[in-house]
Each structure stands twice: as C-alpha cells, then as structure tokens.
Image 1 (spheres, rainbow, N blue to C red):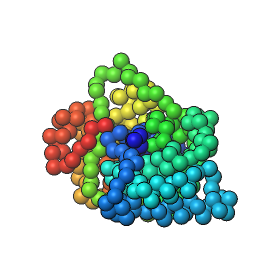
Image 2 (image 1 turned 45 degrees about the horizontal axis):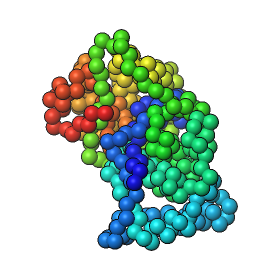
Image 3 (image 1 turned 30 degrees about the vertical axis):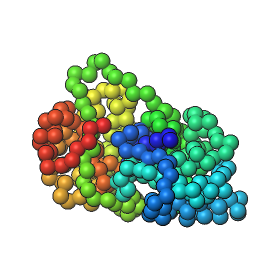
Image 4 (image 1 turned 90 degrees about the vertical axis):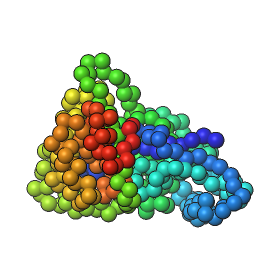
Length: 301
C-alpha cells in the first residue's frame, strides 16, 4: 500500500505565528502505511476506533469539513486495518500528520485536487482531522505528508510548492542532519513558552528585528541553494535561539550547541517546537561532524 512520509519543518518554527515565512519538506526516512492484522488489533489500532467516532460525531452535526466514507473506514478497522508507522511520536516530525493524510487520501470522497490553488482549503480540512490528536492543529504537517512536496508558507493562506535546484556556484557541500535527543515532548507547552515571551516588549522587538529577518533570509538562501549565506543565517538563528529560547534546548545538549556556534564545522537550530525530539543540524562536513559528535545518533538528510 501507499506510504505516507513524515515531514520536517526546516525554518519558521514559532516565528510563523508572528509573521515569518516557513519552509517544510517531506522526510522519507520515516513513513507509515495501511496494513491488516489479526493479532493484537487493539494495540496496533490504538486510537483509530475512537478517531472514527470523533469523525462520525462531526459528520452527524454537519461540522465535518470534508466528505469522508466513515462507514467504510469503520468496516476496514473491523477487518483489522491499522496504520503501521515508524515515525517517532513526540518528535515533531508528523506522526499524526501522516496518519491524517492517509485517512483523507484513502477514505475521502470528491477530494480536492492536490494543487496550489487548493493547498489552503486542504490544510484547513486536515487541521480539523488532526485536531483530534492535538486539541488544535494548523494542518501544516498533514498537508506536507499528503502532497509530498517542499512547501513554502508565505503566510497562513499563501502556500506554494518550491523546487530546490542545485547551485553550481556553491564552493562547499553543506548538509542538514538530525540529532536524536531521545527525549519525546509535546508541542503545545513550548509554543506557550514562546507566546508568553512575546508579551515582553524587548523580546518581541528582538524577534522582529533579528530572528524573523534571518529566518526569511535562510529560506531564500536554501531555496536558491546559496550555502555560504545559509550557513551564516543558521548560525544567527542558532545564536538567537540559544540566547532567548534556552528553555527549549535540553540542558544536556547546550554544550554541543555552543560548540557549534564556535565552530565552522556545524551549527544547530531547533527542530519544530524544541524541548526534545530532534535537533536540526547543518554542517560543512558530515563525516567530520559524525566524528566530533560520536556520542550521538545523527541522521543525514
């Protein structure tokens, strides 16, 4: 059956709430797909039967934003359908997003075409589906998982796919990587920390003057594959996050974060909400970075 990949938010964590752009891409290292089983059905299906009940209640009060074949969904669950996924939960890489994309893609009727004209509408539909798991959802994660394209969110409503072309003028080969903190976390508490800090006038002024411009510049550098500028902008983002977002960086990883800021070899920035999950790294030499960070599990992306 079709695989639904996880997603990675490269840039725009937190700041998209305050007006920056955001860039997200499929992360094929992790994925999920529908399977059938006759063993341990309750364990493997987890919340799916309750999810169907939730969708049915929305449909019964005419609040469901899309036409789902809920009876077919329930019928297949009774046959042993479950979502088999290796996407880590509590890591911010779209475990529930991939599931919601799969539900919409498999059981949706009269689906909207998956093109830029409909991205905002589909995002709104998927946000409603994913809200069952998070209480609130932007729909960003399941949209990326569904369309499997790198998406630029210029603002809440303007979303377009971007093609990343190799820049032949690059003098160095840079690479993103993930560092596994092995600390699951929830998104909401760390978003709340960010929103609370934004109430401070000085902090908010620094956010507008420093972080948001660097996020937008980093996205521009990445989409044009200008690695020299990208490395500089990630350094500035990482420096700002260490200074102002320290609570979002697990204490045991702050030393290597500082090592990166002092180095021309690698840099770190938050991956999603922070607080655990993955750290997002950027390096000029992945093999050397692996040696330097040999105590940690790194994933090249």
